[in-house]
Figure 1: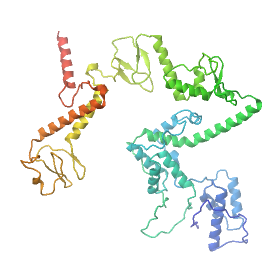
Figure 2 (figure 1 turned 30 degrees about the vertical axis):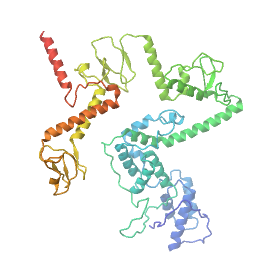
Figure 3 (figure 1 turned 45 degrees about the horizontal axis):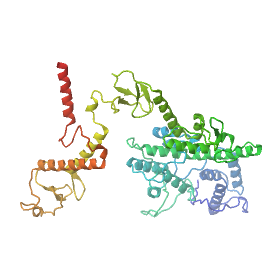
Figure 4 (figure 1 turned 90 degrees about the horizontal axis):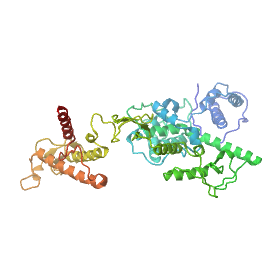
Amino acid sequence: SRHCKTAFKPGQKPPCLCSGRPAGKLRGEDERGQMMEDVQALSEIFTDIDPNYIFEELQSLPPTPDRCVIVAEKIANNKNAPKRKFLGELDRSSCVSGQEKKFMDEIDVEEAARGRGMFANGFPDPGTASESVEYKELCWLYLKNEFTMISANHIRSILSLANGRYFLARSMLAEDVSGGEAIVFAGAKRRRKKGKREAGAKFLRKPRKHEEVPERIKCDAFHREYAYSHKEAMIRARKNEIINDHENRLAICRAEGLLLTCECCFEDEVLPEDMVECNKGHPFCKECVRRTANEVIGLGKFRVGCLHMAGCSEEFPLFALKESLPKSIFDGYERRVQERDIETAGLSGLERCPFCSYAVIMESKADSVFRCKSPACGKESCRWCKEPSHIPLRCDEVEKKSEKDMRCFIEEKMTQALVRNCWKCKRNFFKVEGCNHMTCSCGAEMCYLCGKRLAKGKYMEHFGEDKPCKLTTNTKAFNRKRVQEAGKAALSKYREDHPEVHNLELKYNPMGNGKGKKKKIRQAKSKRKRKRRR
């Protein structure tokens, strides 16, 4: 069978289907040229139908003048005709993993379309670049797998324009493959000189192989953005439906005289379902109540009072706030109200989870472990010091978070002081023994004491008895001194940057000049043994 060897551009004007060509069969170049005209004309009429399907239908009929009309009638009556796919775009449902499905289930299309929930205003901060290495790697792999007919260079340039964000890059690539680019039909062949590539080509001649995404790469920020891109079209469509329904409902209520007036902003065309009342019955629009409630909650208050100009002393009930506020904000407000009610009740033995708002009454003083029963938390913590459960250690034997942060900072600086870097290949190393003339595996030479670059074969000009650096020194003593100085400088720096821990004593001091954690634990154990003997 013959195949079309030219490209179709959707922007061209369609030729008339009833062209005045003579009846009878066409042959040779006339037949191929007319086939292309018919495909082009039908593709511009049926823009959502796959051009390959149109080509096959035309090819199955003899080349007569009414062939184009016959195929047009067949497509119009065939509801199952294959739809056009964007060039290079995969069926995304086959790429969805279990992790993305979990985030998709968290996105409520109705809530987002109504301006509530996590994605009420679209994806948060779409213009900010992500610093996560995992995010960048996943973004690159997913875009290459979704757009297998687009060159990697073009995807890379689009990613750069989109500031490395997946959602924006995917939208731009979708515009590229659907906006005016030439579509090559199945079986088309294009000649190319051997050994030459088209400069700046967007599309490949053959689809790229699908790459497996390693399971080790995980990034919740990317999977959340990917899930939103899956449902963004549904959210947009549902938002348009809500706007149209609202306009129709507004016209009906205006004709029947059912519109109400808000007593705060005095908007006189408010639908009855968009109004809420205080406990005294004063009506207000949900937008005014939402703005007031957000301000009150932001100030840490609990009472959302009536907005009536006459000075009503009533407040809005919880169900009215639930209808006006986004779900996440109302849930937080309701939780705070419940916490306040529990505190004012004056219950004895009431304990709270230090990691969430869950509370329970613990009557026994012997039970020192708080077990959170909240499904979102479920952590075990110490009842007395509010740290994660540390049984069998006592509270004074456990390293607190502030102590751990300080210790890790000091240890990092001490490690950096011990390690040297090659000036040429930047490889890390440290010396255990030997002279101070160091030669890296890349061939670079340097001094271990000062790190200065040395010329090949002239290293003895740098070392000497009358010079700052000596060829042989006590390596262990030098390393110990350098590490101790770095530790003291790090401790001073940390206390300067964190005044709240200025007087904090470490249970485990990496410099070894304080009360060590292990020593303190041994002392506590020996003390308990002496008590048992008595």
